[in-house]
Image 1 (tube, one colour):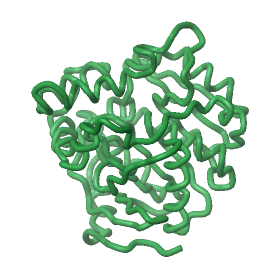
Image 2 (cartoon, one colour):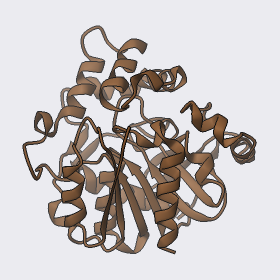
Image 3 (cartoon, one colour):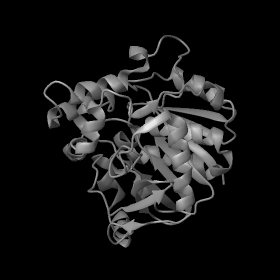
Length: 313
């Protein structure tokens, strides 16, 4: 399969800017820099956008499903740290960012897993580590179950692959994310203030620490006409929801569930259950963090994750 149909601009820029900043300056304020140049790659009839940084072992980053999320918005604060010794592919999931806004029919996680494998083929990646948040983590878990030869290890944060919890019903019946998206796009429509309120309520532990740059990046992307059209659709353009209870038991790769102690969607008893369902499951719970610990505490997240990934080589 062929790779890289369009280069948006000089890819060397991304690598240069990734290494010219002092880590403490970048991480102390949780600030996200402007997105570096990206690449468009065709894979099995769809087009993905991704930002590539660094050299070394291939690592795929898959973001969450909130309004305006992209690979860079979710992982931009930590990407230069990982890019020191890894080839990092920060992918915009289909229907998000600059990737194709295709309509999905049939089981949604099967669709995303198959297309992500096609992207790996297009990029000539035989096996990769996956570092994923929320929506992206569920995609990666299903991919690891169905395409085990393509996954070396997984790090999953804030994902909901099964609809049941160990202690109590899931908040809002597991629909908190969808309800938040409907509220954001509904009523008076998207606004910068509504985006900040969403991040403060559901994604960050310390609302005062949210940088304006992060809010602006998410808000600007949420205004994409195609994303707004998907949000307003009365049909189901995202595909049929799947419960992955059976799939979790089939995952051969080691999985680290990295969770925020104060995750607004799913409390830490939920990933403990997941870690027991996966044959090689691990769990780490980070204090002073919610749903986006990679943005709230980027250096701590990097230290935890890179240590886990290095153990698998």
